[in-house]
Amino acid sequence: MNLKRRLTTKLILAAGAAVIVAAAGGAIAEAASMKHKSASFISGGPTGTWYPTAAAISEMVNKHYDGQPISTIPGKGAIGNPLSVGSNKAEFGLSYGPFLKLAYQGENEVYKQKGFSNLRSVANVVANTVHIVLAEEVNMDVFSQLKGGQKISIGVGQKGSSNHFALEKILMEYGFNYEQMAAQGSNIVQGAQQGLVDAFQNRQLDIYTNTVGMNSNDLRQAITARKGKVFSIPDPIREKIVSKWGYVPFTIPAGTYDGQDQPVNSLNLATMIFTTAEMDDEIVYLMVKEMAENQDRLIAAYAGFKTWTPTDMPKGHPAPTHPGAVKYYKERGWM
Image 1 (cartoon, rainbow, N blue to C red):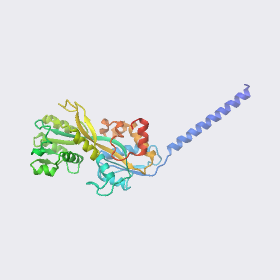
Image 2: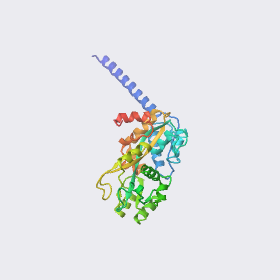
Image 3: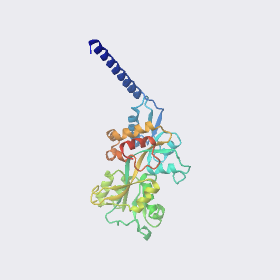
Image 4: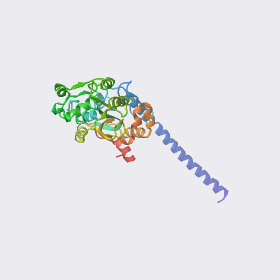
């Protein structure tokens, strides 16, 4: 090859490389300036854990778009948020699995109107585990003995709370409600969790309950004070709660609490991110991808993500899963 041909070849290659670089630069610039119409992410009150969680997730998704399309707004919580998203007053929301299920179905004790069939699940995030702590002297068959006249003193949390709701549904499967128990002499105590812990420690309660992440200070305090034992929910009861109310079956591993040498059957109250069927696949895909691949960022927003596992994201969805989320979960082999 003579000098002239070699120079010509180099020029052609250089020109080709410049075209490739220019094309790549254009693609990068285009990706950096993707646009999306504005969307609100409705959470909880500014002082709770849902608001910083939604804000962190919004921030992670917004970096893919020009103009920061997702804004985090405070909401009315687990019951109100599905109403807001289902009626198109917000585009994304946080709620608990049972309430998302009830909102999707409609015409029930919580949502009297027709169901919001447009609701779609996105991800199962931090779970709260149902804990029923019995004092040392209380028999493990205590709930089965209610029909025989057994009287108990039980703390069930504040009315309207997730804990009050969970215990109400479990007791219903034993054939009782709070009013019936009170009528036959049982003491049903509502109130803040710290007050219930104190009452349990002072032997004013036989049973302390809390729907919360495992190994919380309240739980460890209660179990240690009375040599408490965590009630294992019988399989038939647990299966009905899962089927009817959208809870997720969960086993508390042996050794989680003092004196607990066996696994304990329980339920998880899943915190769900959800949207509507109308939301485009791309932004939902990016949302679950960012969450799954940036757990440290989520932990910085809320410490409860330390015990969260990204592989749980597609589990226990009470409404159909959005196609954008399905795409990512299938790519990871999680669905």
